[in-house]
Length: 75
Image 1 (cartoon, rainbow, N blue to C red):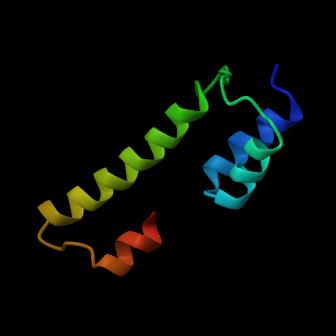
Image 2: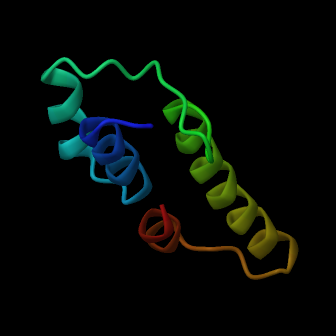
Image 3: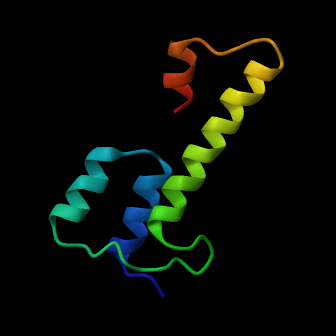
């Protein structure tokens, strides 16, 4: 079972709330834990980046590459 702070970190990562992630880590939260459904926090971050990269690549391969602004907005 995850603590309230661990759940907050997972939520902040999923919602890309960098300030909240930094705050929780600065408060001493140890990120070395495993969410039973999603794995460790670093895996959640990597999964999000990989999904973004897939979307960028698919748009490029379809002949409609995303602009820098669209990439940034999607990230």
